[in-house]
Length: 415
Image (cartoon, rainbow, N blue to C red; front, side):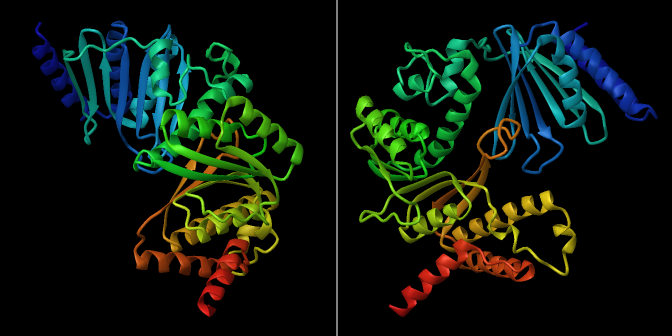
């Protein structure tokens, strides 16, 4: 029987299936039978698309790739990408659950053929197979590295000192997760940097700690992007700053320096192009954002931490239900705080995204506010400010960033 006749026969059977009272059970069974045949062909790549749910947190596409005896699953939401591995024996059940419940299109690529399964709006299962036009290459550890900005097999001194790379540039197996997290952070910055042809950049990293990401950011900007970058790391601990400066000298990073000072007191005569703040606790993040706004920084990357300030303030007669339970109230305070910060950035002409840097199961403190200076519509700016004012009034809030920016505006108007 020809492939065309097989398709016709399968489509006719699916027409009958769609009118059956046991449609769902039979549909799942039919999918299972077709997968039994397809998976015997040792597929190199499988794509699940046409997601049923369209919200920001639900996966919009799954790409499953054969890699060294197992399969790697890349899950893409509208703003994030997650990766995990799965054994070949678990692949069929995973695909059935995802295809049957979350996606309407399944495409499987082998070395010779391309197989497609699709579910119509009426629940009909459509099937097609055709010759592969472009051969799919089996991925290996060698070509997997191409997807990362900080690549394996390159000598990157900070990654070696961090224990993520061996001295010859190989990934330490136990540090794979940390390696992916670092690259994800660099990718988020690269998404913004790559849209402009920057020749020079000045960066300030507030609360840099031991400077691990500061060193890697410097490497990325100067070695990967070939930008004449100057970075200043700010931290309160003098011994940490001393060690960071010694490391910068050892690496030959001549335009990277560290200063021991308080975030709340730092001033600069040359406004930065980029402001970075990872895990600046509570209102320290507000001072960082305030400085970035008044300096008119082109880019802001801020990962808030320990948003406690308004937890004790939250009070509402209309929404008392939100404050009855301590842990939920604390989570709400963190959400309120960052929503206010994002809206204030919008009001001051920033395009704002909120992104999970890594999978929340790896660390709960990974939400990053990314803001880029832009031409924001006046109505959108005014709406953002009014939302902050309405929220503050309803829940009795006095938030530090709002107060700092209000004082700044009043001083500007007086002058």
